[in-house]
Length: 113
Length: 114
Image (tube, rainbow over the protein chains, first blue to last red):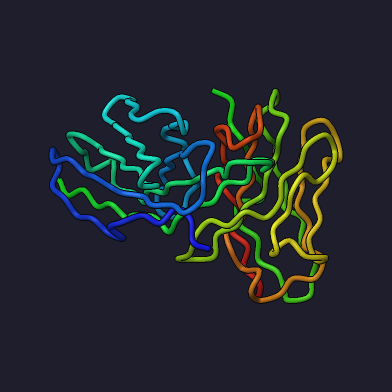
C-alpha cells in the first residue's frame, strides 16, 4: 500500500513567500518525519513529529500532524532560493517495526529569487 | 557535527559483477539501514541491522544482497551479481534508537550497472 504521499508533486514560488506541502498516509504511525533532498544529494533530516503531537516548529519550519485525517503538512515561511529542493515525508509504522522508514514520492519545491 | 559517510560516491560496474558499498555510521549509533532510490522514484527501505544481525528486510533485499559490519566502524552492502535494475542511489543511515527515530543519512553512492 502507498504510504506517505505528498502533494503537490511540484511547487514553484517566489522568494519570501511561504511554501506548504502536504503528506497523507494510510496506517497508524509512531511518528512522521520530513526530509529534504537537494538534487542528486543525500537526505537531510528536518523535523520529527510524534503521533501524540499536533504541531512542531523548528526555525522557519512548521509541521502539523492530524492523526484522525492521517495527514501532515510542512510549512516553510519566508522561503529562500536555498530552500529549493525535494521534500519528503517518511513514516514509521506503529507496532513492531524495527524502524524502517516509508517515504513518499516527494514535493519538488522551486524558489525563484 | 558527526555525519554518516559513504564510499565510493559513484560506482560503475558491469552486469553480473559484485559490488560492495561502504558506510561509516555515526559512532554512537546502534541501528543501521540501507535504502535505495531509483532515479525519479521514492526512497525505498532495503534492510535494517542491529547487534550484528539483520532486524528487518524488504522484498527488494533478496539473496543477491548481504550486509555486514566487519569491524567497529564500517557497515557494508554487497550485491553479489548486479543487474541493470540495481542501478540506483544507495543510502546508508544510522540512528541511536529504533522505532523510527531520527535516522541520519549519508550522501549516497550512485551505482550504475551497464
